[in-house]
Length: 155
Image 1 (tube, helix red, strand yellow):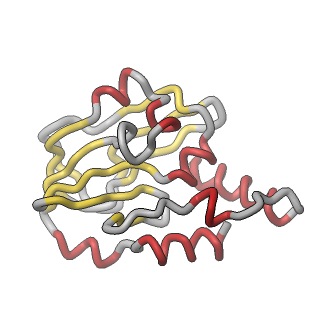
Image 2: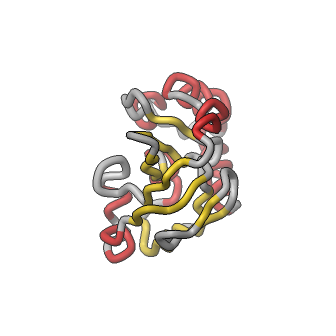
Image 3: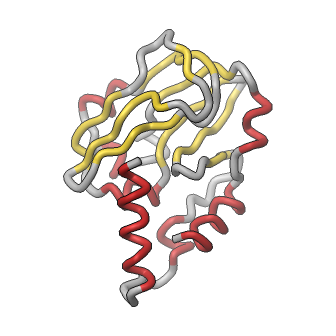
């Protein structure tokens, strides 16, 4: 996955002495009820429908986002499957579904204005909504505390 390569490259900067002043400040999202994948997608769930996006860490690693391809409404996705793409001036990355279900909405504003991801990755920059078919999959994802620790330990 290209995003993982970009993230590994960015993390090498940290080991070479070029580090942000406080990783927690740069990458923490301060959000309860948000779950994360190791690929830096997030999902929040309301009434059995998950809203999916990419984390601050991912959007910063990618840089200026210039193209987004989202799954079509009505299509089925499985947790861990590639279901779209994000391209930036630096790299391209697949979007990986954090949960299984049926796509019920996609953020057309992000497709027409990809930079929304950089400006507002949690609010206006969300990617798609999915009706969960297996809500228990959320137990396999990281909560905010675990995600912050994952970033601290691996990046």
